Length: 144
Image (cartoon, rainbow, N blue to C red; front, top):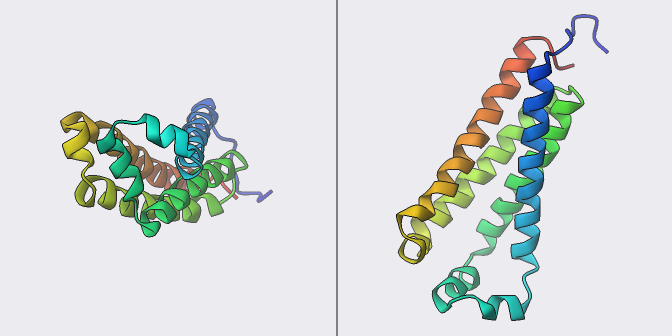
């Protein structure tokens, strides 16, 4: 460990742990979507089926990058590694690309209505916060 690295506060461990949990939930959501059975897809209302069937490969790749990168970035935070900053920026890039499809290119707002914006806004906010937070904790000397 670097001699200049300081011990983080309890809030660092709590925030980083909750962030990892959040991103693991994202990984589970990605896996559920990527490996959705035909039976599960058919059980959805037709408008929702259309949304899932029309997801372009680049949006699915961005989703994977966002959640797997977020989980890895938060794990790196807990391990107090500076690589967390870069990985979380990459994850945030995936979030932005994914949300361009989800909010602007798909028909999700027609299907889910204005309430369908809550999760995308929350995901973007949390992703941006994690980029900010990783830079802040590095500035505090908590990463090596």
